[in-house]
Length: 325
Image 1: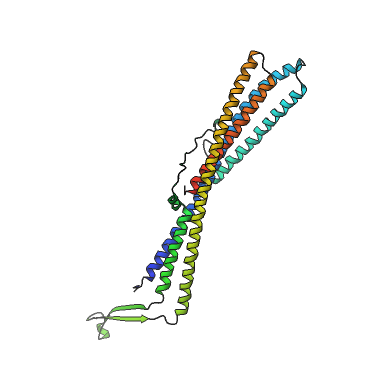
Image 2 (image 1 turned 135 degrees about the horizontal axis):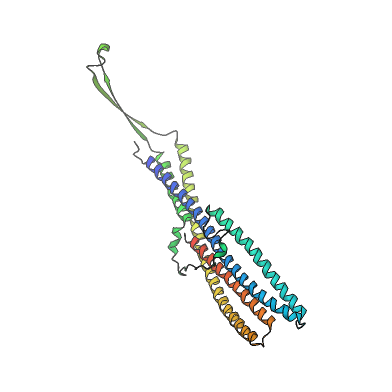
């Protein structure tokens, strides 16, 4: 008879340990999903930059054709043509290297997910534009969101399991009451064993006092208390680290959003300058090399903008992971 609740404490302890293990599995799944999401948006961002590079190379091919015509008339500084060819070759090389990185990211996505996407794969990735919307996360986050994190839930379950272990250790000091019942049939003669049976039963109580096990039980109780203290310390550490992660990720997200806004203004300025220089060149009083430099400045600023947009998405994923998904 478990009148002291030893078995119940053991069941509660095992149940909380199971919840803690499930939370640890959830934490691993959350890490995998964040890595998968981050790789997905990195790949889309690379695809968008690849399309930008492709468009730039097309414009450079047109400028190259015009420069060759000017050069044939010996009206072009050879040094300017060399600088142009150096820049164009660098862009073509960057495009090829970026294509390799895109394929590597696609393979990584297939490895992490165990799934081959019908949209983002080796054959059809060039058909994607690479555009994506960034999830908006409120800047003001309540502190109690920390309790949604799987690692915090696992740490809390570990404390509850330790409490159950303490209950088991305490119950081990108390007497154990056993009650044995036995029911049977008897016959006064062997030749009438199948008939004239008499019903009998016995009820035997017993009490076991664990006097000689007290040193061991005392050590088990001290050990259970120490495990509980360690679980509480680990819980506080995990909560503190979680709050720090949320604060850091929020600050990083805010800083990346501000930088992205600044780069958007810069891209607008370069786009306006390119439009003006294109108009001047088509009117006959603009310089072709200046047009090339304007294109180079615009595309470089667009590359930086897209890289920082991808950083905003990365920081968003980190923040969502920090608050428990």
